[in-house]
Every structure is written in C-alpha cells, then in structure tokens.
Image (cartoon, rainbow, N blue to C red; front, top):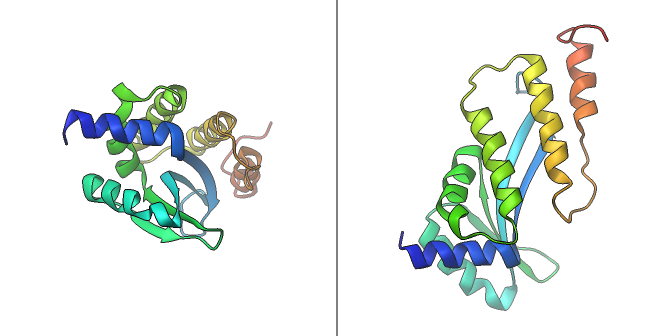
Length: 159
C-alpha cells in the first residue's frame, strides 16, 4: 500500500474512525469471554462511496448501513486489527495512544496461545482500562464479569 494511502487512512481513523476492544461472552471460548477487536470507519449513507474506496484499499472487512443514516465499515479480528494498526501507526495523531495501547495488548494476546486464567483476567482488565480512552457508551461487560466466571469454575486462587 502506498505511503500516502496509509496516511489518508490514518487521518480518516483519527477523525471518523474508532478502535474498539471489548469483552464479549462466548460459551465456546475457554474462559467464557472473547476479547473482540474492531476498527470502524463511519460516514453518512451518501458518503458510503468513501468507505467502499477504503475497503478496496484495505481489502478486508465489511460495510453495513445502519438505520440511523450512518454507513459503517468494520475490520474485525485481532490479526486484521494488528495488521491495519501497524500500517497506519506512523501517521496517526489524535488516536496515537489508542493505537499504541491496542497494539501492545493485541500483540500480547497473539503471542500467547494458551494463557493462564490469571493472564486472561489481566488482559480483561487491560481491555477495560483501554475503553476509558474512547468516547463511548458504557461497556456492557467488565473485567469483574470475567473474574466472576473464572472464580465460579475454580480457576482462580481464593482472594
């Protein structure tokens, strides 16, 4: 990808994008929760063409039209989010701290195939801490939910 395209995407992310890390309950996951990573870009429906252009450059993700008149382009998954953040990192200004923290946490997750329950709980706490950097609505699930689940299975030592 050309450097100017990477810089444009970084600027778009700074202005009309978001980097979201969240805890999502999943029965099929070892510790009962998924750490979900998503980069989203937003435009009004009439500006969807810009999101289509972004998708053609990035080559990943999907675009949907929300009922509130906004088109949203999402790139989801730890590997995909790391890949895109590494591409745009040198050019991001407003969301520099989010990019750095997301890359650090997601890289830790990627590099540890089988975390202990304590390590997973620490990641959940880092996700919760990361969420404070964003201007978003209150998160539905917190590290305490993960801790409660892990404790209910007897996977954490007593306090």
